[in-house]
Image (cartoon, rainbow, N blue to C red; front, side):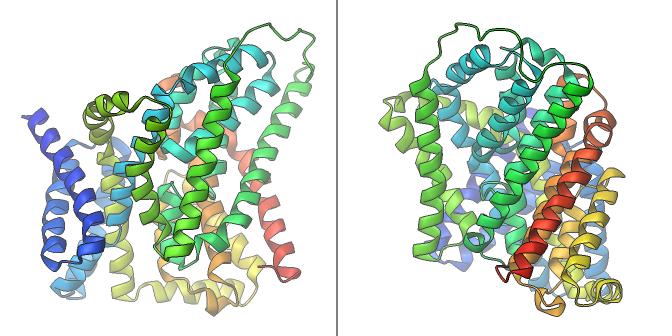
Length: 457
């Protein structure tokens, strides 16, 4: 019976994605209503299967939203709007895993393993390569990067150091979470803040670079403190790897991100929707060019059987976040948050950044997923009321989210690594990454302040 429900949920989830994208051009209210019905069924079936932290967070989001709607006598159209508030995130998360097929079956996986064998022979190099690959591949495959990078990193003997491995993956993935339009975090934040991703991305990429450098230099310092030389005395092993494949992967990735930005700019279509369309189309173009289209068609079955069933957590979290944001706005409870923030920060942009980031990080360390405070703050804080731009607010929320998921024991990244490395979520999250998060957040706040002072932000 469970397998039957899972299959139904997968079919309906794909149905939601295709109907949503089709209706962008058809614009049929009937198709919208049909999508809402499918979404209700999918949410119900997802609740049937989710467990642990996701179940607790999801139940809180849905329960509080429903209570607020009932208490404030919300009409049916408000319930419908709330249900569809984050449907684009469900669509994106459904289709983005298709981008992982070329990486797994285009010959790149073996090439990356060869790079590890050839160049990784000390802790600093291991950290640098693992974090870079996590950031680079994470842009394309999101959370699937955890298992992918873990498999690739086994080519190095340094992978036995669980703290080093976990920290490199967590921090590497956090750097792309700050800016990448293919991640649900940025999709949600850009939507909530009203910012333009094209204006937001240059500053966000710089913040990602800063976060990456902080992680690297912290690792070098810890290595030096442990009495190990940053430059290993060992000679580089003479291991051959397919450099053309690594270059090819880089080219296709750059083309994908550039195409998303250009199409969004030229057509005016929301970046998140362009990402969803690209996830559906680009793998066919990619595999067709390298002559492996048949593999893509064959692997679509694996995508349906493996990737789509795993989406239950994301569906619960992001549909719940949409409901919660709408209920907060409809009940006007968010006005109280704005009043409290105004009392603390007034029109001071630096204080605004500090208060929001510190608050979210503390809640994250206590086990509250960043999606809850980010949804509340992003849905209620109006940039103009604090004398800042929507881009500035989006950057604050992006930093808060990226750093928050690095230390939150309830974040999917930390939980996944905890299970795969055999370490507790408290070790993988707050214990190993708190100092990193504090230093990186401080430097990113400083750089945002500098940009505001010179009038760039």
